[in-house]
Length: 166
Length: 323
Image: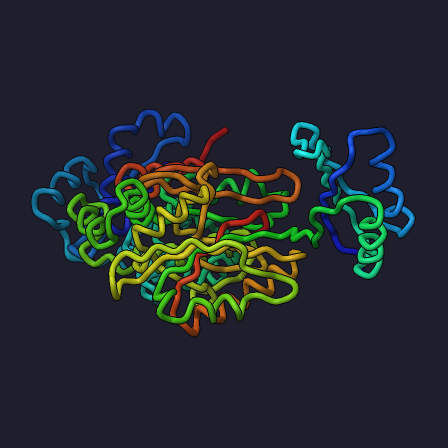
């Protein structure tokens, strides 16, 4: 199954550089989804950051990166998490072991990427906004189910957003 | 001549009667001549020849209706074309007894009584069998035109789901919490003082009222839901901080009732601040998802004497319009 990857490379400002990146991707069966050329954000070494996203099978993506690292400077590489959800949690979020909650939500397909907690007073319920990203809508759906289960067990109220699907 | 019986003569019943008096000319122009032949509520009744204006005045002055015949006798024995059933909601068979009596006689029923949620399907089947109509625009969202929108205008659409704000009291409390960042209990007392929330606010704030309305909406779009099928969470545990945290992410919180093939629930939800469902105050609103018409949004006042009476009159027009 192909997945979405994103990578940022730094290219010298001379002709033919982009081709060095695109060629290995294409040769290994990667399908380029987007190229973002950040000419205005030149690095101190006068290189241009270029963000490229592509679809490829996991194994092939690794090979692509291996080859690229020989040719150009790869600044960042990772799987693109495509599905995102923000949830509001109300209850004793901290006292019911917040790190346990997050550990149980995170897995290889989904993870908590942002957390914003407010604690009004001692013994009063606190409020947390938690953002979860996942590599697919299905993985996100499963992560949401995990959150709901954990919160039911910890007596925390989960407020979900209204999404496009009903 | 359309003969009308009014069952239930509290705020809504009196509102209907007052509009029938004050708008008589306009109404008759559109539906033909009409006459209220009987009125009954828990305090008594009146039937035969009477002046509607005088009865309204008498009921207000004395707190009752002049005669002793009870509502069920009136419903059984009077001759009427349409029963306007505006008694209060009771979640058992007693709530729909008057309607059944009318339908069994082949008379039409217009109601604001959410008790129809108890046996929606049974009532509709009975109406069909007796060649009568049961009209219920006023049961959901007050004067917000949603039932006829679904049943008539969108009749040939596939309704993928409905999502709405069906309880004005909750929406008022949440709006005030959003604006003032004050605790739930403080805003609830304010709402009670203003007459927006009832002395016993349980049915509203625990999402029960919205849940009953959702049963009616779900059945209207062909999902045979019962009250027990609805997953309900109220607004009583929402903190003022929840709004601050949500708003930093571009959301507010609203009590949303939603019905689709995969979801039947009433619960507080994060609503994007730029969504039309982030509506303020006591308003009701609904978003309908259709297969061929995209999303349709409606809003309106969800309660109030003349608002609800207007929805009742709209059903009267639909039943008897002459052209």
